[in-house]
Length: 233
Image (tube, rainbow, N blue to C red; front, side, top):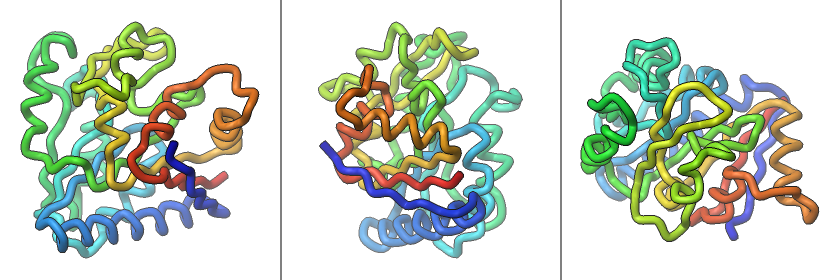
């Protein structure tokens, strides 16, 4: 099982500033070593401040591939689209040169679009250099939702698929998500979260009396390297 390395900050601005610098350094090192780098980011409200700092980083963004940990099966112009958030907050300024590959493809459902979405990702270097995940109040990460009927296959450490179609019971929209093996194989896995409630939930997951093993713990347990948690109140 991978260990957790905690990075605690007094406030979210400090967290975003230092995390952006750390991610940029890792991407620059990957470019220097392998000629290109891959970055997987998450949607939601938490990453917006991080993206504002990261997009100003003076690295060779033209050699950075960017994609999403998961996506709602909606058009890129939809208010709930993670791609829309990334385009509005990350792929600007210096990061406008990054090579972005979205997860939403043709097809009315994620199941119909799964093969095309998988093919779109073929050019992105793997294992990913940096994966930045969030965590929901229910312990989901990416779109690996507790109670989703497809969860068991998506978090199977021996699974061969990179992507999975997910039908959450507790959240709107059908989803497409990277599977546990694809996320956990990252050269650097980062959990970016804020708030006391989420910190307490994660700590309880690693206590001896945890009532159940939630998806976030499954991913951390399977991680190739230690998971870095960046947290602020």
